[in-house]
Image (tube, rainbow, N blue to C red; front, side):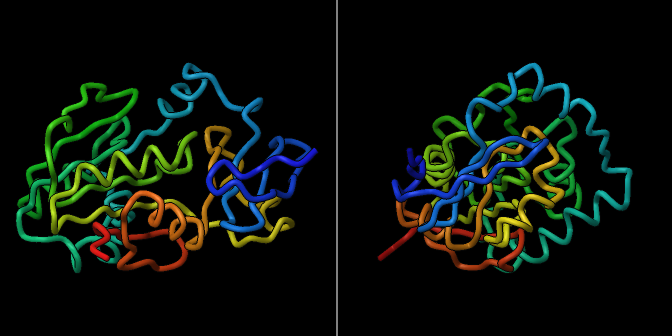
Length: 217
């Protein structure tokens, strides 16, 4: 029995790892998802996130975000400087950097650490979502929500490490070792999602960083 892709409905190839469970790779849009029987519970997810000890006082972690900002944000973000960091984690370092050093006014939202949906009824010049997409069970709904939060000239910048569409490489890839990672993408996957939700990709380094705007076509 074949399992259809949860994004585009195309046939998938089953990938089985002896430790890190079962995955399905789409033969069309290249989306890979973990079999839902191996999803963690919210409590198990939170335990993993609680072990992320990051701080704005850690120069290596700040540099990690600056690589993202310099590649995917600063050359594209409009002047309004009202931003949302969606999935800010236990330490909202990205939002702190943008507020402290770049005159942004940032809202934060996180499923576990900043649960109030501060974004409701608002539009933003910049929406960031770093290392979140790989945790998402329903990418179309996730991207559709983020798209709905953009101003007319606003940008969405995401960070998630791309797989290289090679099953042998995938089975040895460090990114699947985090058991909370359930969705994996390539640029082709994100292009499909963008078309589905009304976004346009205006930049990608084809590895980890991708920038979107509203599709005006």
